[in-house]
Length: 178
Image (cartoon, rainbow, N blue to C red; front, side, top):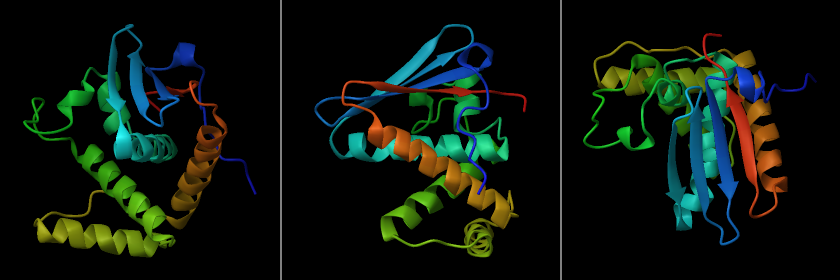
């Protein structure tokens, strides 16, 4: 088995450094430091503090494995604030790549919650249904090898998160232009 890549570059060469802090009260925070030094962040408390670190790590796995530059972390690196991802959508609609990433991450979150594993064919069928209802063509087709590598990367990230002592921060570099 090949080891899943977790940090493709060093923080110095990254468009973004993602910092997820595990707080002692069970909450978490997400801070994203861009190459220009600007930062966007949010606190995640209660149930969100338990859910969002794994959700955010799943985004990292999906976006780095698939090389997505216009999904969540790529948009943050380009200047989007974390508060831009939601109503009233001040930046306008999300790019096609971001919608595809959200769909994959959402499916992986559902899969994790249900304790099941879907094949790439099942993911692609669910995506086709999602887009079909909206009168759209599917945006991205997953291959089994991609899905396997995403899961391996995510598992490695989850293990790092689980091993992180309360009060510490997990930092991950996010490169662009891959």
